[in-house]
Length: 310
Image (cartoon, rainbow, N blue to C red):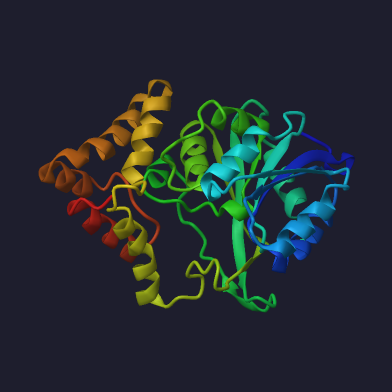
């Protein structure tokens, strides 16, 4: 275990894209973190607004910030590039969105929990989030997950990427293969680490998660609209150029399948192979092996699997 008071090196991985409006506030909340030595790794994902570029250019003189600019490759590829470019001398690594605000003590809490785990074991920490409006007025808090397991990770991501912190063993494991078919960066991380390591959940919010026109994710939706929001990603992935959940699991099996124990391998393989026929999809759904968190969401997901939208 580590003495938190010594200041453990941690590296937030920060993707920016046309984010001048909230950029400074988020950066301040990162550098207000206590009892950790923070090195911030920023990648600008091809911003086009002049205000963002001006803000980012001003950061180049900060000694604790590593800044790079690249072409626009999107959220998933940008975060994996940041992870690949991260400093292996750091002990912990965290994803960071440009328009949120970190709660004081976020990294300290994460490190305190992760440091209880053997350093060779891959582990991630994530927490609930507080939903806020553009002015940081409270809207609500995310629901607490009921299960953290490989079975759940195959069909759902419950680990909010903006709260996620990983140890070095998890970073090294993930960097063995940067995926081409990840539905999202945090979804892939949750899947990999739940298969081979430890997943820690903190019910206390560590991030104020802004809900605005550029990133609304349904934090304050009613039951009906919440389900519509969850169905739409499945529908959108019917397009040939969209990555489906089954694509992610299939790539995961191709990379890590030989290292999985038999029960986990069989479970993942059943999920992927169910694509081949209607009867296999019915059998997989009725097995109840994989479940999403909430009953209505789980029902919708199973219906979509039956009709082949996954």
